[in-house]
Image (cartoon, rainbow, N blue to C red; front, top):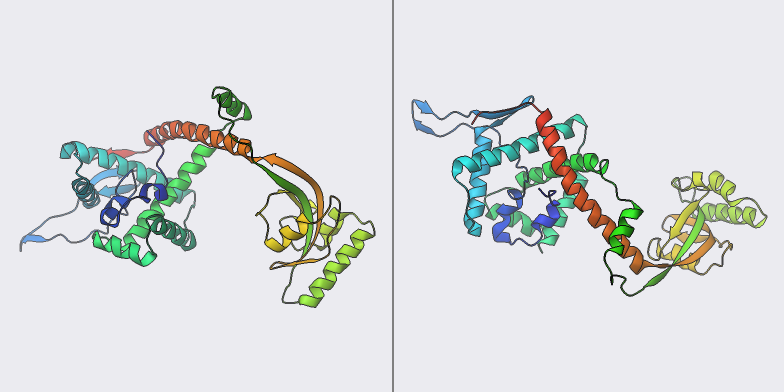
Length: 341
């Protein structure tokens, strides 16, 4: 069993006419539909809903299973695929829904959530990967008989399950440098063309503009920082006292190794022009005024590094796929499940 692909990956190359497949394939959870009154076959008779599975303290209803079955059958028909006999398919689909329900319960117990900003970003990524604007995506969804609201809820549920899986599996899988070396040694002729970049190890003090500190005051404070450094005061001590960058101040202003493109242009340009151990004049960026010191420079072979990272990710993914199957068997066996088909 393979780890469920990210939503974006599954949806990337589907056409607008097959958007139904976006929410029914590869184990994607469909949001349960609210129970609705069924059509009367006669004034005296009404078709009632029923429970098809109990999963811990929750249930899966016949209406939910029928809805999922209908969508899968429509998908198969649109794609010209063959399905197993309906009774067999029902059990397969219900088992998948049980696994989804268990994972969603785990997400709830862990207080996991997906806020609207994350969800909107995911929906936008899906639309863009299919070459659509958000409006076009919404139109395509509606053309397949769905609503954007229901699709958003499907995506939210999938993201919650992904969070649970990542939390569990990432703690159970590791890839060592030795694993990477062993793999590379078994793959001769994979070195590739070398490509070097310069990395700079730097530190800084940031003086931010605030409601109580205008442009002139911020620059004056940055000048004070540089003056104290030029008089021999310890950079780390001054950074801890003066810097408004909470992410680096407690570490003495250390930024670590910085590559081209990782900092804003004004900062990168000033840093690039400094000699090792040289302190800059105050540098203005959108964040305020920086006083920068370059501590060290080095050249890195990014082709080799990139190759090693690709190998590391490939080994991790293979092991994660294997571990996911084991983990899902574990949580399935630990859950109370009563199938009532």
